[in-house]
Amino acid sequence: MKDISVVIPVYNDEEVLTELYCRLNRGLKVISPNYEIIFIDDGSNDKSLDVLQDLQFADHRIRIIRLARNFGQSNAIAAGLEQSQGEFIVIMDSDLSDRPEDISSLLEVLNENDVEMVIAQRLERNDKWINRSLSKVFFMLSNLLTNIKHPRNVGVFRILKRSGYQKVCKQPDLNGTILSRFYQAGISYETAVIPKDPRYAGSSGYTFKKKLYLAMDRLLPHMKHPAMRQSRDPYFVVKEIIDIRDTK
Image (cartoon, rainbow, N blue to C red; front, side):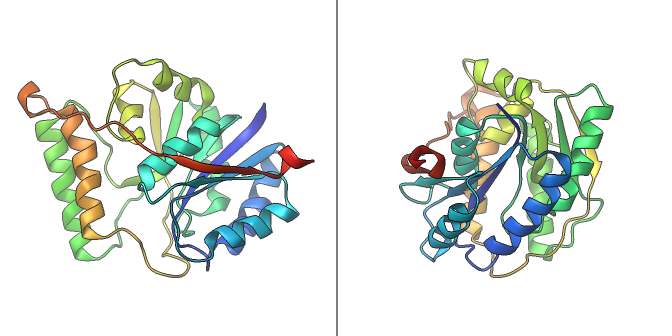
């Protein structure tokens, strides 16, 4: 059993991965040397996989899950969670907008409160106006039409106890995105105000179409009116799990 698993979906992030790893390594060593970093290559078509394998060659605590194609961030996270072994699980973006140095702050809030998950929350969104507008529309529709209340101004960055993730796995009828399942399963949580940095390099792979599909995955399974509900189960195909420990 590891102390901490860090689950990171990756899509065309070759420019940022080395810096991400270096900062993660420095931050995690302060917390515990017994950790693993799980990178999920979500169908990247740049050199992300090559960079990850170079990093893994130097550090056996890195595990790589290679998906058969691009399944989207939420499905990539679900694939990583299935392989995680840590007592505490961190989920974060790969572009360094979520700062590795803040993992210790999330863990501190988790240990100080009787909850199963702590989610990083921004006081303000510094995104483009179109992204801010879409976010406001999403939360308005979520509160109006669904049975799940998503906290505002949060992303994927969070830490949760393994007991919380196991609670999700034991629920028989959950569907929708993996993050929505946390709320549906009734996991207790707190939010912590954590600043979000600009993207370190490159450009976001989240097109308007992908954002629309993600919103549908989050909303449709949880509609208050049964006739409006649609099942949106997570789906991914793992092409390869690359774990250097298996060859030693």
